[in-house]
Image (tube, helix red, strand yellow):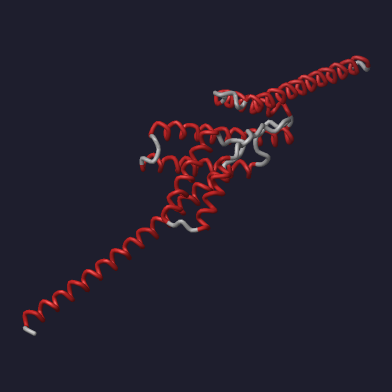
Length: 246
């Protein structure tokens, strides 16, 4: 066997090994890229699912729910395409079933001037709305949703945040009323009523406005009765003074 032939065999062997190494490296790179993509998709699913599950039922709109559902569903579809395991398919199907369920609108609690039952609950709602606004900003920056849609929904999120702030003001008014009486706090209820009126573009706040208006009427009656009682007491005191020539 000639030296040239031996050299060719060696070169062929080196080329073959290099080719095998390249294929192995390419497979490893693809495997790593797939793993990173799956991690990114599942991280996005966890974050958006947290928003979907935690958004206050009394505040979530059809548009917000639709956006979150479409976003989560698209990422589950991508996960199943990359890794079609039974677990991923089951989770994807479970979410599709949940997303397809029609949600009944949550009515404002009858007899209550507030949406939330505590300031802690309201504070959690404000946190979720902030997270959602940040989520919208990121989608808009990445070009994953239309910029006009992102801007409109961001404005909606700001209005929801303001609504929760007003709810907290109403809770403070309730505490002040209990401690100091109707006359001290009636202006605070009126201020909240006026602010909510400005947010009531699509009449979804009608029930809450009705409850506040009803409470304001009750407070005004209490204040009038207190004034009348005071006048009567003063008149009786004057009559008593005249009787005894004081």
